Image (cartoon, rainbow, N blue to C red; front, top):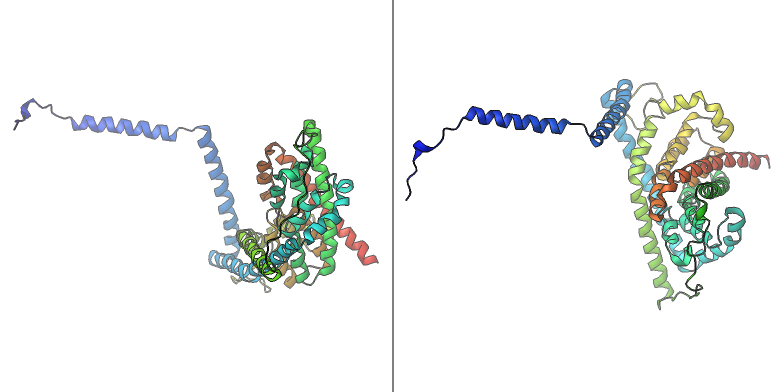
Amino acid sequence: MRKINFSKLKKIDFDKVKEIDLKKDLKRVKEDLKMTPYRRKLLKEMIIFSVIFFGFFGILATRMTLPKMLNSFLQTAYHLLMETVLYIMAITVMMGAISKLFMEYGIVKLMEKLLRPLMKPLFNLPGVASLGAVMTFLSDNPAIITLSKDRNFSQYFKKYQLVSLTNFGTSFGMGLVVLAFMIGQGYSAGAGVGLLGAFIGCIVSTRLMQRFTLKSFPELDTPVFDKMEEKEKVQEEKVEKQGVFIRTLNAILDGGMSGVEIGISIIPGVLVISTIVMMLTFGPSADGTYTGAAFEGVPVITYLVGKINFIFKWLFGFTHAELIAFPITALGAVGAALGLIPKFVTSGIIDNNAIAVCTAMGMCWSGFLSTHAAMLDSLGYRKLISKAITAHTIGGLCAGIAAHWLYVLFTLF
């Protein structure tokens, strides 16, 4: 075994080692604190978020006290879940089953053939686009993208027309659910007029999108496919050799399951967005005090809109400033906007005219701010997102205005 001569080992200067480590640590800290453009952006976002987040809850807590604010926040979310979300889910399940039956037995094809003559003169779209309107009306906005990626469908379009399908399809998104919900609240006349208003808003939005696109990118005035590989061969769908009972049962179960998926997907939007909007729309309890009950808050939106309510009264016929919360919420999620309706009904501030406007704007916008970017990105036209959003914003406003004045005309007769 080799012996170690400790006398030849150098004495370690621990103070010097500590000094070196300290310098390394300081250098590392300086590098960590060095502000790169990315870190500056993160810092700005953190500051802005902190100001908005703590400012929002700070205003509410100052007026309501912190315990009552938190209780109202959670109670509102709970009531929305139990009284609104489950009701909407029941509608989506039933409507999903009905729409699947329509597809199974050819009703969708019949509707598509009936609507086809309207496409070119009204929307400047090929006749097959009517299938997209029917599909999004029965389901949701993204259904139009599924169709547009099908070569047999998209071969009939020019590029600028294909892009405008995002606006066209969105205008009918969740239309059946919105109509069924409004009728279920007892306002069938207003819901029917609202459908006409959404139709007008769709024409405005689709045509504007086409105009904006051609003005900025005239090269998109070309067919999606320069040469069709061959003419579409019409083939009849092979109906599986199953009995009518089994086909009907499968359609009901599959459609109901798709309704469950839609119902679950709207839960975050309804609970989070509607709760925040309600707490900024409605005030304290009837006696003017805060009790921590559901639907209490600080009416910031109502106060601000009240200053310019004459504009909304003339455009939409709104008699109460609180009603503007519906179209604001519908920008992000129409399911969340529907969650406001029962509260409006119990408060006695809504009528058939307001239902018509809310139906038109809710159906036309149908949460387009949360879907437009993804839809256009999936089509490969991200550069047109701002134009699509601008056109659809104008289209939704036109839908609400048209619904109001159509209802005024309806009441005259």
